[in-house]
Length: 289
Image (cartoon, helix red, strand yellow):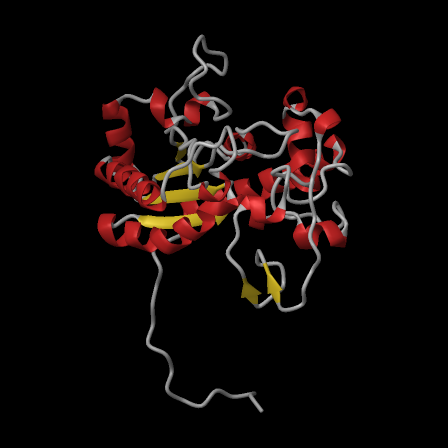
């Protein structure tokens, strides 16, 4: 069962994660007992980034928005759902932004090694499930490529969730913006203006856009062919998209939708039983023309 920890503590190492769901506030024996007593014990790892987000957003943007959503989602879980938030990985693979001041990046190999070491540690503690939650698009490829390796090396059941891909509310951004915005545009600026308005300086906001092509693009937004890019290829300010239509009210709607969906997904993962496999029937299916 969850450890009873006051919501108000002298220390704030847990950040936005509820204290009773923060891995770091449990003792070693307490973690071990959870692993032994709960066959579905689940650990959640936020995989973020520290990188430039244009002249108007802080470099901590991805590691601000992601943990805020994760912490709020964890707070909504029923007490019988044993899901703990690990101390987050603040840094990620941000090589596409490495030429800009403020960016601190892992190489892909380093991020893989960090995830592997954390996964092995979670497995040794007796937990059976690990959820990787990405809040930076540049980490998606590494997570997609490597989460199966974590499963094979540790025996954990490993799950991935990319926050940018869940619960996107139609109509909050224009179709034109949605088709190109990747970094520091309307949606991301709206989210930070909602969560941390003190850190946003719209007086200096400047984004850049590019013409759309039907076949070749720079992100998976409908084109079948994708060209490799770094942020300087698509923006002179570091922001790819238009931050000017941003609004904290739009950010509140978008963030709430992701919190609700993530809470549902985390409970579903915790309750997900061991997969059953069956021999496929060898008869001809009926009702198929």
